[in-house]
Length: 346
Image (cartoon, rainbow, N blue to C red):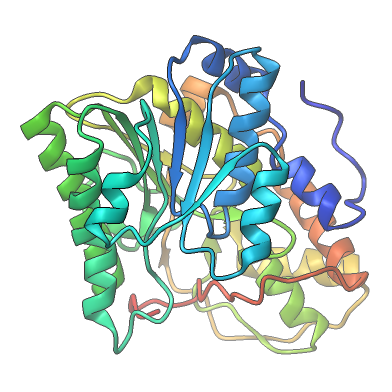
């Protein structure tokens, strides 16, 4: 089903269509998979296009199933947009036990709820969102397959040039956000052991698209003629559609104890070289400050690539698309990633 990659992404509708296009391996997985799909926390940066991808892959596989998206939906138009694409949008507060109990049963759960930005000074809410809420969901969907999003932040900083953190590495989260995400993983592990819930844990590092992500952050700083600090000098980036597809396909690999895998791009990118490429593509001057620290938040995605193949979109395409998008004044989600944080404070 995958179409050739475009030279440029025209507008938001084209971008969201591309972000929700399912690869063949996901269509085949959705053909084999039984039951409905419910996406909890669908209202975030990745949720809408992930839900649309699940719908499109199921339709391409000719498998009738409900795809359901649950969120608070503070913006009513977001729920309407999902409905327009064949996703049943349900407005609910997942902390409300009665609302959670009323949600439809579903054999397949994608858990995307969580809190990162604004954690500083509201640590209690971050812990409740990231470590307490998963317990409520595990109780409600104990007999389902669950794919739970986590983060590469649980590893802590690792030396650059060594291929990134692997799933077998010791976990050394820095800061309350990362620690609460490890708490989330431990809750899913507990319920998987206690109730036999088949679970996959996706450690993501980092999903990007033209409106959001590390590359978009750098491009917008360059466009504003801001100085780029290279102290956090290295990062991984993966096209959000590739991350969506790998997460959905991992429903087939959910197990007890949980199947844990990293979702990350294959390139170890440098902030300096990426900024230089973006500045050249955007015909902008570049101002750089700082000196690269020897370590960063880096993940090795080999386990995921061995199952699903390498990401479809490489870093060169991501940079070219982003430079073009920002130069033309394309939309932004206005959510800086704060990827440069070295102390785990967000």
